[in-house]
Amino acid sequence: MKKFLLIIALLTTLGVSAKRMPENPLMIAHRGGWTERVVTAPDGTTHKAFVVPENSVAAVAMAKRFGYAGIECDVKYTADSVMVIMHDRTINRTVRHAADYSRLTTPIKVSEIPFEELRRDYVLASDDPAMRVPVPTLEELLAECKKQGMIAVLHSKIPASYVVAQRMLGDEGWIAFNSYDDTLVEARKISNCLILLDPGMQKNQSVENTINRLEAFGGRCGVSSMNRRLLTKEYCHAIREKGFEVQSSIFKTPHEVQALRNGVTILLTDFAKLPEPSQKSLLKLRKRNRRASQPVIKQWSEEIECGALVLEIDFKGEVEIILNGERRYPLTRSVRGTDRFGIRFTEKKPSLSVAISEGGIVRSLRADVYKY
Image (cartoon, rainbow, N blue to C red; front, side, top):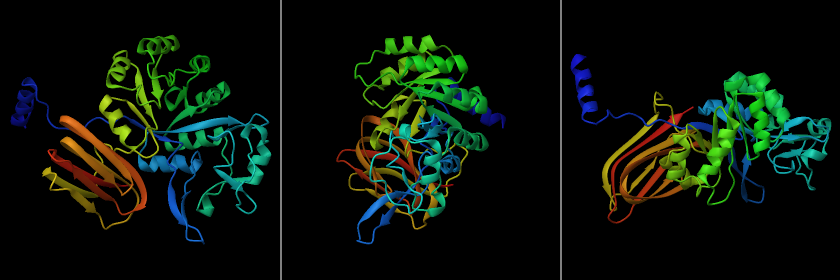
């Protein structure tokens, strides 16, 4: 034991650290841990349908099962000022008629329908009849967050929703998130929760201006942006140097890898998943020193009900990675480096494909499948 500690001390003195799993950003499930499946219609056409609906109580429990730290949810007022969980201005995309599960043919705004009618006449859309339940209230969703030990990220410009969240979850249990400074000021009056400001979509948004806005709120703060061109390595570094958080917000498939490279501290995502360092993988694949003539193709035989496929790849040059036959990652590195990323999935036999460009090399590749 003394010899081992001496070796570690020597490595540290020489500027070399023992290999360890990189620290994950805080993982937040966008609109909860919703799931989909491909459905075949009577005429032979196929489409994707919700199984666990987004912004539902069940999506909170599924996010917990997947191992996320929290869920993001959207708050709207009904016509009679009841706060419900709904992303869109209309209910058409995510609900069906309760009586016969038919689609809505005319637009119905959340703000124009009374709460009693919303609960009585409509259910959340799902391929599973058991999941076809009424739209939840804010209180119902937050109660499930409390039960599951999940952080609730409120994408809301309704100050009254902050009062409810603070009463039910306390400072550490929720996050206020939007682009309105005046609304977030109200959140700070109510709570010492983490505040995430969307600084705007302008490409050249000044980091100094953003920092000034954050400092005006006081307490724990950060930025959140859907604009990948804003969250450069330099921008993320400058924000973090001031002690603020940086959240990438629902970036598309390959761009989440760049966000991780750039140093975001929170990942708000529809599909990305990284395991906890202590979590053991169910299935594994290890490869070393692969070149263009040696692509990596792997199809596991076991179907996983609820899982994640995570890849750690040390490479130089260009590679194209496909996870589960659907998530495509064209990645480039001019100098050798390592990327680590993964996706969640349901009801699949996981698969991996890695193509390497001429002149490129994959020094090491590690793929792990996790079961939840």
